Length: 147
Image (cartoon, one colour):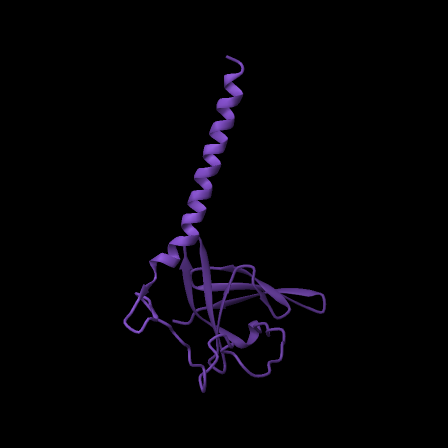
């Protein structure tokens, strides 16, 4: 019984090796037999579609849309003394104040945002309170919406 087992294992290994080699041989030879020849003797393919991208005189699709030279500068903070409160927006638990300067430029700020020489303390229903420090003196500035 013990002599038959190694012989049986070896036979399976040989059969498995032959089976794998036949599959590899078939995969190599099948494309050669599968080619169809047309009337001229040239190989005909079922689907021969080729796409070419003609990039001559076209804009590069990967080029940045923002071009030119830019100066990186720190954004200017809002001067609380030169703006007026235009509106208050509430979004969930937060409130945002809409401010407008004399040129008509708008700012949207919320509690904790920085302003020139200080920060926003609270944004109420119709008012805004900011804390501003000049030369060591801290003052509270309140802006109210006009009726």
